[in-house]
Structures are given as structure tokens and as C-alpha cells.
Image 1 (tube, rainbow, N blue to C red):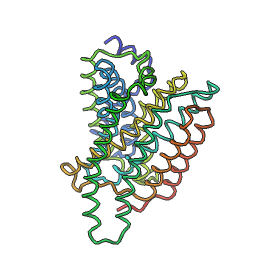
Image 2: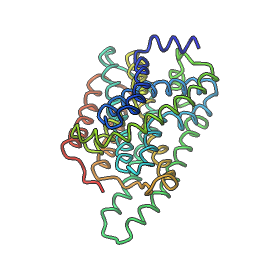
Image 3: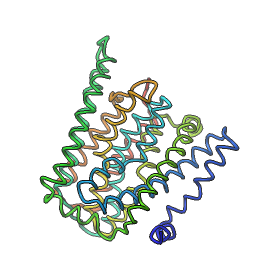
Image 4: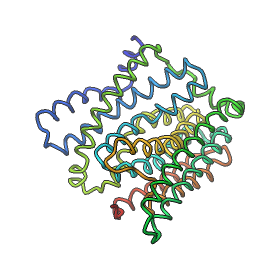
Length: 365
């Protein structure tokens, strides 16, 4: 308990936890204040995501590499998963697809780019494990290619295209999940010596909480995230109109950044401490989790909880963004060395995608 109190006192992001009860109060007394509820729910999700991240790391630190890898696969992107599940139940498939593509692009370009920039401003040249970057970039390229196939069928004139896309999406989801599990087995068991450096640094000076406390917090915070996500999803369409944003932009930028806020904090701090292995592992590892774990799980869950099943047919702009993000990361991480201007290049590419999506939103069905 002392460790948690210490974290609450010294982590200013967690001070935003005071907004969580405010969200529920405003939702009860002014349910039509959609813009205020949208802003409050965004601010409330950020500290909750931070607590989820720290609790997950604390449990993983006590269970060993294999179980820890599984926990990170299932809980590392829990905030995005909960928000997406809530949107699925509401039938907001466009928001879900935008959040999936946005999370991949945000983590690979914005999170990694900002980490490289912040680290490079303090350290002249930084080095990291190329094996980790190559593996994650390869997994992302696999996912990008898998997303191109349903999109190609969607663009065809086949009368049975919709049914084919749904069948293919379910099949590809199982394939991607298998690829992710095998990737965990490869990096954590059969060839873990190739990634030992990054794994060692990831565990350095992390103030792990007791397992019992961490598990209890995981349960409590997950419930709170689910409740706040209900309010967020319920207000997002009205708020988007107020701010002149399309659902695609909200999912691609807002949901992606909010969901990854906790991971970004850790990645940026690690880069400033010259622990770039940890930053690269967080940014690219989170992207591959979204592409190979979260997206397939959402497709399979949609068969049971959504009014209409989710498929992997994204709009062309999303495919382009994911593909070019993957290629950019594979290119800039090939040397295993970085300087601040490399981060600038990734951030400019991210800004280009975000600005284009805001000015020219896709015509979604």
C-alpha cells in the first residue's frame, strides 16, 4: 500500500484520478452535456490507463518471462480493448476500425518518434537491440499485408464480397493470433537470448507492487475503465460534431493517444534515461499486440456481442497509413542507432496522416 501511495504522490498523471468521480456525477445530473462528458472521460481514462499499466507490469515482474509475456499480450493494451469492446456493443464499427489502425500508427510513429526525439535531445547517439525492432517490424508487416487482402476484395465488383470478407476476416484472425502466440514463444523461450538485453532493461528499477494488490487493482480499474468507456462512447459522436471531427479521426487520433497514454509516459521517460531498448520495445511491442492480438480478438468477439460482425476491411487511407508506418519503422530501426532527428522524421509522417484524415475524412459506410 505504501508503494501505491508513493506512486500517487509522485506521479502527476495519477492526480487526474480526481476526475473519475466527476465523470459519473456529470453523467448522472447532466446526461445531455455530451461535449463535457467527452472531455472528462478522456481525462479520466488517462490515469486509469496508467494504473492498469503499472499493475500489469507488477504482476508480470513476479510471474516470470513466459507468463509475463502472456499478461502483456492480454493486458498491455487493455484500455484500447475495453473502449473497442464498448464501441462494438454499440455497433460503432467505424470507430473500432479507426481506433485499431490509429493505435498501430500512433504507437509506431508518434510514440516511437517522440521517444527518439526526447532521448536524442539529451543523448547525442543512442543504441538499442536491433533484434527486437526487426521482430516487431516483421510482425507488423505481416499484419499490414493481412489487412490489404480484405480491402482488395471490398474494392472488387463481386456480388458476394461482403460474405467473403467476413469469412476471410474470421480466418485471418485465427492466423494472426497464432502468429502472435508463436512470436511470444520465439522471443520468450526458444530464442530469448537474442532479446535478453531489452528484457533486462525493462525490469530495471521498476517499483513492483505486491501481486495481491496489483491483481485487485487490475480488477477494480478494469471495471472503472469499462464504465468510463461507456460514457466516452455514448458522447463521442455528439462531441465529434461539436469539434468538427469525423468518427474516423476520433478513433484514429483521440482514442489511440488516450489509450496509449500510460505506455507513452513510460517510453518517454525510458528514452530520456538512455534506456532506448525499453522505449522501442514498448512502442513496437504495443503496435504488434494491437495488430496481431487485439484486432483479431475484436473480430471474433463481434460475432457474439456486436449487432453486426466486425471485419478486417479498412478504408484505403488506413491501409496506406499502416503500411507506410511499418515500412518507415523497419527503415529507421535497421541500424540499431538513433539520434533526435530520426524522431522528427517519424513525427512528421504521423502529423501528415493525422492532418490528412482531419481535412479529408473517409467516406465510411
